[in-house]
Length: 430
Image (cartoon, rainbow, N blue to C red; front, side):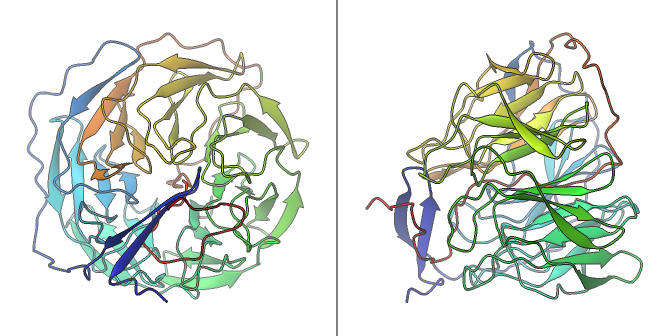
């Protein structure tokens, strides 16, 4: 049995490239760092449909978590750094100055965790994998005013590769994921910001990880696909009802997938795109979930099959998918736009740096900030801004406003330094 402190198994399950490196024990040197709020001239807007580089992160990272704060700044926390060690560092991006500034460190270095903006403006970070490579039960809160993290109640179940969703009642639903034995979980639990504690809620019908969770306009949470207990791609989907605390099976996806991206569209439908299918291929397929009838229907395919990408709803109603990994686990710089009205994807400007398992955040001025990510063997410190500059597409006939803001991370494909068995049917290449 390999020790997670001495070996790193990096699995990108496309053609499933598996490599092993030395991994010294992750170091934890937390410094006392404050928040800099210096404001300078805002970066100029760029030509439409292109990406422009902005300030580099202070710490190169991927498998991190991102949160847009109420003040318009972007908080990035944790992840794996450029030595493939878990980091406790966190930093803030100021869209006005276009710069990153270090802020207080997490109490626990972690990656593949979740980050959720709470109604009181604090950020809840939960679970993930720690420096040892084991799944964590620890959670902590970031206070944007003081720039510091404080521990809060522990999860009842250790988990990584899970999802977190802010519910309309202010509680946070954490669902599924894997434990330290790489076993997919069906458990779910709720965080109460008032008491700072976690309470178990109903179990999912299907254990899964690397799935997506989408808060629908009716207040239900749609969990879709992921890798099941055999670590094969699943086509199953289910709905969580916050009122009853139970999960109900809904229509299956047309394509089994994991490591895909999900986006709530202005018409109330959920768009799922890409991911690895059960043959280990990066899929170009996309499909729509209709909450009114509980079924999925195929929509236009991506121009490029991808997994570990991001999908961000823009202010003009289109969705930009960026980066990710192809069938060979190679990072991509390509990006494309989904038009809800036509149901088709159009190629747009490419990223300046190929990246997968990065983060993408829609900023208050309408640009998208892409940060970090993997372009093996490079862990990116680079960040860049996308500006579509295009006119708004034709409105969809049944536009429905998006529910209250939620920082639900996009689930992305497996890229883990934790030793784990090679899942069937995803063969590993030497």
